Image 1: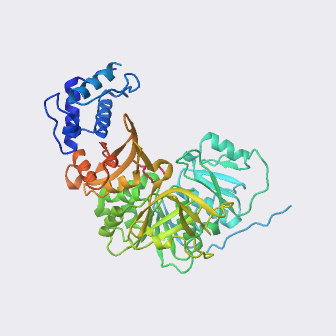
Image 2: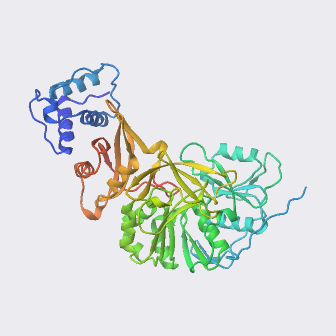
Image 3: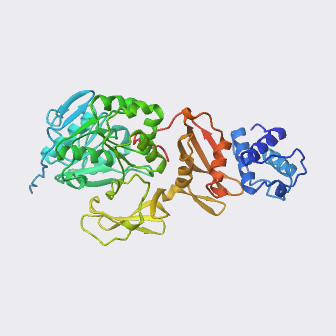
Length: 83
Length: 413
């Protein structure tokens, strides 16, 4: 399975935000609640990554953990792809 | 034991029948070689299907007619074991495996089989003829696939009523039907919403050239947008939508140009000729005088309804219509109606897609209307966001170049 690079995931995350009429800040430490990135947005991002990969992400493997910042989301997606 | 065969008065025998560009009548239509009975006649064209029906009406035989492509080997086997001789498009006959007495005058339909295997529903020409009484003289388009309930509706109308011609559209003519219809003076046409949308989308000028006085929609949920678009192309035509199925027959007919039917039609005083409509939970329940054999009583239709002011909207199948997004339920049909209401959308399909966190998300496939400039997924998301709860907004939208169509003329929605 190929890998969607972190920068690409960030770009996809920006697209999710843009479709909701918002913009993704460049700071990885930005708080998800403050920027309005909700679980539906996260799910959508996962689908966009899956479409890019042409494969399903395996969410069972790593176990969900606390995701509060933009950086956490990027880390988590990265982790999912290598799981 | 001898069975008296039941035949039907062919009042429409001299009605015009146009097949492959040739103007014939039911009477002058080619004859099939003597058909066995019971027979499952599998056809690859509309003309043979009509010939089989006339044979059935004249001789009172037991008949199932369907396109060969709808009846796979397993189903052919099952039909043989149920006493049907199988007649193939080239005329080859496989005798029935089970010998039994025919049910005189019985016409069998296969349900669409969009979920699971096709089911056989028993009718007669009488139970299939739901339009009776004095009808204005009309020439009907017949675009449906032979053997479906919608096809039988037009066929029985033409065969049993005066001055009701038909113009058969074969599958390869579906893209250019408006030209054929205009040439043969078609004044009435019945089709699925997908069928109409494609016609408008392909060439609305060609469509407008057909002298339509009666437009009928059925077979799929009918949204307001398609009714409005047709009204624009045909300001003077009567536009009707019909809820009909092999099981309950034509049970709801609406002529006021609006989607859904009046709430006042629910739970009315029973009358022998009028189907009784009710809602159980959010499922449409019908007790119909036009039902198939053995389906007496209330039939749970499996179709989901939703109330909108004083109207009852039929939004889609219960088993596929409801999308559960993290515990919040949304109707795919409702989302679809919102998408179809966008001026830049010619067609849309809405479905559930497996997603992390929320289990399922709403996704869509959309065919844009090229006449109205490009649209982006962000445009559609914004359009939907102001009209739907956030969990109902389609998150993944894929753009298609053309409207997919199945043989039943229904899109896969």
